[in-house]
Length: 282
Length: 344
Image (cartoon, rainbow over the protein chains, first blue to last red):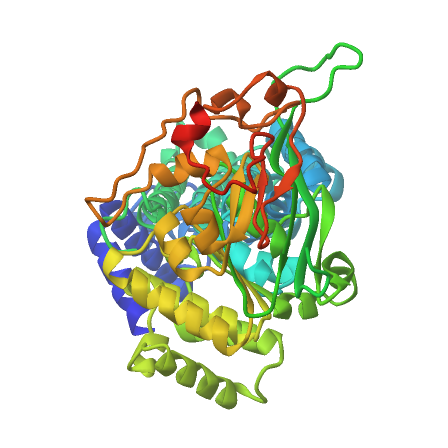
């Protein structure tokens, strides 16, 4: 445990991107936890002053056309974004690791089928598939998360497959087989834990993509109307963009910042976990 | 060869398809095959140490991997105590794994880098139900490590593989193989990646353990002097085939196959005054892609004649269990063969 802690500390010290990512993520989580304290108004409350400018009547960043407080909406929007990012990329990460790992390790016909499946999923224009499914099955936020997860696993699977392909030739895998461990044990105990790190980094970067996808869906009016999401704020604010720029501007900035944080985190993780970048000790 | 052998290898073959990028072939044209191991038959007694020597790429390591069934042979079988390992593997794979163990060449890669030595050593014990509970298994590990000269055992057990030296790791690798009490051990160049200073200790440890368990040991190496020193019998491999087999002293002192002679003549000797004729083999290093039809060594052989290119030679019995697979060896009686006069 102490070892792990020390390693994490030195990794944070060595990589500026990771540092920015981790601090940013911590801030986002703080906003989620203390959201009700930070928010000055109830974001679901349709107040009397609509389209109030920033600073007017105690509205920090103004209000939208329904009189909702923009600052409070932004604070609550973090929840939606994080939820979508984490759930969707978990689904895509787990699927990718299992499918890719099995393909690379078992090889043969299994691998042929799996790599073709990966190629098919990489070829599909994902966003239109997501749009199609969401408009068919309703725009519940859970649907959105699951669909994003189910359509983005292929890049993770491709990475994991490559890892498994090289790991299965390593001596420790051979020696595990010689000691009588079954194929499944080898896969779970040796291939997955040793090959998972590039996938973790990729999944974290995938979170940025998931947030953008959700925002894009909401912007097209396919978002869940029952939750507050930044994409939806932009969608609703766009017709007032000339008179009330603050609705779209601030929610757009929030999306950009969050995406950058996740991208930094993923890139930093990639640097730290990739043996090519690590200096000296493993 | 004797029938009461503990391990009997029968016509073991392993071919890999060679990808030459051709999709269409002329009718009747054979697909090119890499014949890594091409019909090896050997028998090994309990307690015997068999050295397998040969240059890189001659199929030594593939043979080792076939014996532990890390790969399935194209044809042929290995019998242990008269029982086919192919059947054993189907019926009770764990039983087979307990009988046959391997020590790998690269100790730095033999253990998963994410676990401590304790975790790594506990796994096979647990998997094969050795010891009642974790407490007892830890005690077994502790004792084995101490006996193997890895002291203090507690300290070693809490370490990760990359924190230990190659010698220490190779000891642990040997200890782990011995946990299962195998009767047949394959050592695939176990010291070639180690510092010269620790080689002797590792070799002695391996030999002691093999002797204590009365196990049959196959020692794969390209170090001829070392192999001679430790082995009872030596088999010389060339392009996937055994070209000479016999007791270690016989093969090294009185090599009959031209390839063995060349190999030994190029081996550095400790004695600087020893007079030895150096034989150079000419020609390209061979590839095992569709060799033949004649003797595989013929293209590089200094003794080759027309007939060598026609047909693969039969093994010639030279007495005392010494065999050489060469059509030019017909002087079992004269016994004075050495390269200089057989050249004439």
